[in-house]
Amino acid sequence: MARISSKGRVMKIQKLVCGWVLALAMFPAIAALNVFATVPEWGALAQAVGGKNVSVFTATTALQDPHRIEAKPSLIARARKAQLVVATGAELEIGWLPMVQRESGNAAIQSGQPGYFEAASFVKKLEVPARLDRADGDVHAQGNPHIQLDPRLVLKVAEPLAKRMAELDPSSAAEYQQSFDDFAKRWKAAMADWEKRAAPLRGAPVLVQHKSFTYLLDWLGMREVGTLEPKPGVEPTSGQLAEIVARQKLTPAKMILRPGYQYDATARWVGDHTGLAVVTLAFTVGGTPEANDLFGLFDDTINRLLKGQEGR
Image (tube, rainbow, N blue to C red; front, side, top):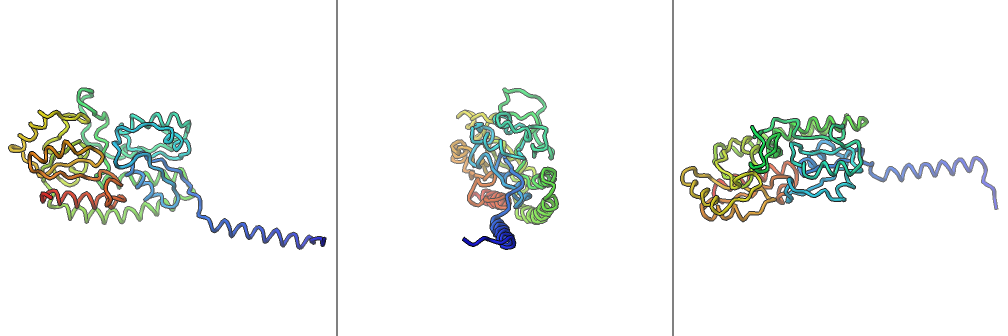
């Protein structure tokens, strides 16, 4: 068998190295930051400001009640690999996220660490209770946590989220900043359009099934004149619903709003007895076929509200 010369061996190694380089170039780059988002809105936002530099896992779906999630082993396994947890905070995930964090054994994502990010801590919260009493239902001590339906607050969360990603992944800091800048530009233009389209809704009185829409109503200047739940998270009795129907004569509403994750029986009953349109809102990304991203969420929400005002 012919012996390969030293020069031949070098050339062969060079060819192998070139082959490996070309092969690696054919594969996409591995995402630098592994993100665990508790709810769809923050998963979508993390993807928007993280771009190709993040791999996002969302722990819940739009049709799950975010207050009542189980700390399943599958979630713990995902959290174990995460470098950044993006949560709502304000006690929304208090029933399950602390257990997921603890059982994951991942020191980087514990509360107070750079790998833990609470969206609600960057905005001013509404409906902060003057007192804490479980007799008042599922009251959140830090205020209403459903901040995602005010696009002004989404933008306030996006900037510190991009900065946190850059802190955890400094080699891609410039890309996170560029992604945020691009998102902010498109988001501000979209907000101007949403507010223009939603102008006819200003001042409109509505009933809500659950206090899910406080921030949405505040943004659009709409008025909540009643809640079907007598207390947050407490189902109404037939007598309480009858009182709501009777009050419609004195304080008439234009429509009834309900989040897509809740059963509609209560809202439908009141709608049938008052003639009010029941408007089911996505509440978060994925809650309706049209709400397939953050922009679609608000497009669809405005469309549905306008139709509801017309009685459709």
